[in-house]
Image (tube, rainbow, N blue to C red; front, side):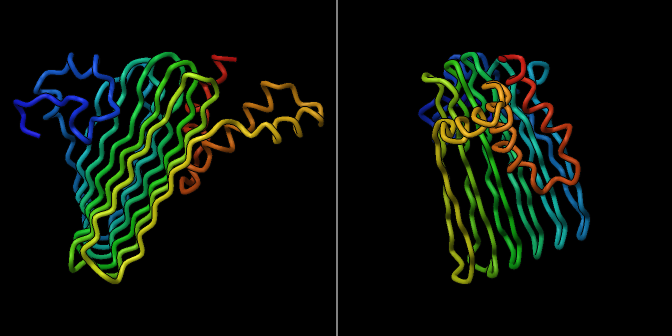
Length: 247
């Protein structure tokens, strides 16, 4: 998208965005990319907590050198439109790991958008996104994996699950695979549903109050996104704080 062209919901990468929020954008907002280059063999991890103080659009471009590993773990919980957009280029034997959670109520739209380009052979990527919403809030994941013709031995995976705690909330997923190589392993899955009432009933039968049971189930649900993180406690606390405030 050119600097002078503002997005609308007619654009595929913005189809689930908040139209009112898009109308307030300036062209400079779309040019605010943070470019990060990882040297061959380097490992770098970034934790992002995008709450009320960090609403808006956050755009990152990663160039991951041969054998390097880039990890992003993010929580999007602001009460205004919040979008994390990540573009990744993976070189020979590189790895990209994404663990993301969108969570909250109100009427906000929170979304994670990724484009992962497997440019060279032997690279791997894994993306796990969980959405938990209530009120009339929306959680989105738009993820595109592109495998170049010579990028053999690619191994790429995406997983999106949405949990709706109230009628009126919504979640959307748009996974895409564009594969030109023939010796690859690529997979994606998406599911949206409500809380497991059988599990809540089981916990209640063991004496747990309803809100405590709900909190435990949501914690287990979002923890999947941070399974690859060595110390996920701060991220889990940030992810669950909107639920605690709701309770």
